[in-house]
Image (cartoon, rainbow over all chains, first blue to last red; front, side, top):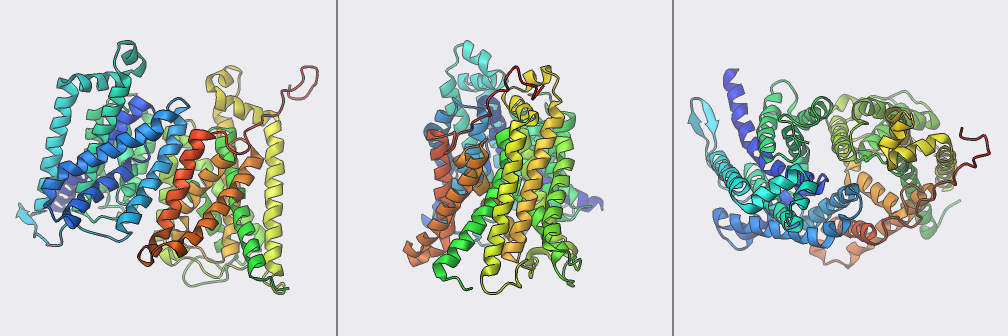
Length: 286
Length: 319
């Protein structure tokens, strides 16, 4: 029983890290541009497929394509912002929401057109899991967790040590005040897309490593990613990370007493609970 | 009476577009009037469809059924059940701001889909419910299809008339006031939560009834039919393209977008053979791009909203 619980917590930490990477972008974008980016899940999908291009088409090892997939995804999000969201920003934020919903479907159909609707994997070889204290630990999971932690550390350094990062936090806290203080808001918005897009791509690649690639990869985790961002408090990157892990673990542990097919319902229930009882998130964001 | 190929297609097309128009009118109550963002349309549509299907199909070992109730009862019950779901959801979520409500409704849509897919005793799971009776199956030839089209047209007319009336009434004014400035509406003593809940439930009832019509028209429903792509997204594009806030626009948008959507079917024929299977993705891509074009260049839609003129100060109406 305890063994099972611990095993589920291990799985939960891995998927929680993936949710966390997605939730950071959602949270920052929500705070800075004031809209929930419904295209974030499909941005994850796109990142995963960019990596697939490097692995399957160019025949390169995954670790070497990884940074390029992140960069390419970030570039796509910046381009979408340039062409679309920047022009819509003058209107109500909710128009951005509708637009991002459309962008989500556009990205997904592009993935389907280019790579097809089938399930794909990066590598077919199966590595047997290690046995540690009776727990099954997959080496892939350790890699995912290690790189996730490295990315989180890099994000922390970026947010606390660089001028842009500090400006980003200031803008996430209070966009108007930040603008009055002379922060170049367009530059910060651009960087937010870069950070959000790159982290989303990493999340998508890890998700694909853990399961399989298909065009619905990212859309299927959009709900837990949103839940993590809300749980952590909008505009709070650290809250989003904590929320991600909490949600990952809650989702896995729920399978002990709930049919696994209803896992998405856990995310939904948490969203509703948070919004009703603590709309500012666990740590008091906005 | 037998319809030739083209006429048969026209009847099929108009009926499908008409069903979408009903659902689009429902969304117009929620978004156009009241400014509430629902992307769980597929969920409410599905609840309406399955309710109508379960109430009207003959007894089956694979799913709940055997009630054998007549077609209008099923469709109305579909609306009522979708409305009940909306009431449950709305009591909790309706005072959330647009983004949060959107996230919550996406969750509802997802959960409805999961329940339909996994509760086999109720819905026969992924295999779906077949043999939903066509209400006019007894009529000779294609008269039945024409009769069904007439029912859909009548439903549109009925819903449209009722919504136009509601829009002109104090109820519609309160909805628009809340949409434009919630704080001001509240300061005027309007019960904002109640008004929003009413609009959310009313819109969902209309969506559910549209779902019921759909079930009887296609005769077979499965969770696959409620892919957010086919329902939620198309209905949103229809309303935005037609003009949110304008009931006539909601109907017009449904017909225009359904025409475009059906027209792109022929794309598959042009594509290289290897890509023919991916034509569906190309169609979604085109509609997605179309949505962005509308949002950028004509956000008010084909028929912009025209609020009814303000009430004359010397008249007694609307006091």
